[in-house]
Length: 431
Ligand code: CMC
Image (cartoon, rainbow, N blue to C red):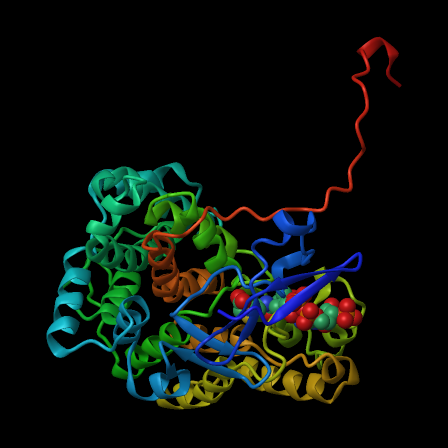
């Protein structure tokens, strides 16, 4: 690597190599900066920090480009399905027919939740937020499958195919169980069905009545899960990588990622968007008050489903999902007044200088809830749906960390701004 960048500090130049990614992303490799100069880079929120090399997803936020393993998201949305895309994200290539079948078989064989583990649900009040239950149950998988979760990279990777399939399949099953637990409904057993149909069965069948799959519903579910499959180094994926970098097993790392996803600025935004649209609807409002409040600069009043840490252009996922909303509703013979409200809100925000000047566009969460709602999924489950969809991305990123022989534990530094050294004050002399 040529030494083609230098950093000048107090008159002294420090040369550093420039790395260039396969899509032309340039980065200055400053790993030795502190050792060489005594300085660190300050980059609050890591917005300008490449924390890893990754081969999974390419994202160009300025131009609204998203590709998994090189394949554009709109092509995958058009031609692929969630499970094929999950395979692609995790293993790097589109599966052959035999690989696809083997993967599907593993998913089906590992869909169940052990009876003993099912009893863990009894400890949760019915109104526990679904993401809280999901995170803790996914963490529990490490206890039920200790051979797959040894906290030893080499051993855990030997059984990676099984643990990856298990994670995808069981997060889906657990997601449906979280829903049924919250409603006081009995759990359904998984069947030998395709992944999305099985999810709908686990959610909506009753002991006395099998859910009958509607092809339009299955394909909408496939699309929406696929659209969430991975998204580069977002907050939850970076969390999975960070936890994994300590040697933690896949299930523990995924549970941490679920926790990160639950926040309203990340995956929790899809629930917040729906609550906002619903309250505009219920109060017969035109949405102006949300737009005006969002312009006040407070993090708690942001226009949910708008803006993105990386996109400075349309989120390509929002475009696909936004267009799919009307198609899905039409196919299902449904209408949803919240779709009109969302479209009007989008138009109003995109005419407002506050949003235009900051390049704030709708993101993936802006329209996804309309589709979830059309599928019969309640608002408090939206972020669980995001987690089910995102599992392949988390798994692929955990694998990169676990299989990198040169990987280091993630350990950022800080600029300390607390008190300087002072001597201990005994209780009698305080206050
Ligand atoms: N409403 C109002 N103002 C906003 C919004 C918004 N939704 N998003 C950003 N801003 C403002 C922000 O306050 C800042 O203003 P100023 O320059 O005056 O200080 C400016 O726009 C630039 O913000 P940024 O640096 O682009 O934003 P960020 O990287 O700190 O945050 C974000 C990114 C996604 C957390 C933020 O846009 C947000 O809170 N959006 C609403 C929540 C949301 O929809 N989250 C889902 C994100 S996509 C899916 C996912 O990752 O889970």
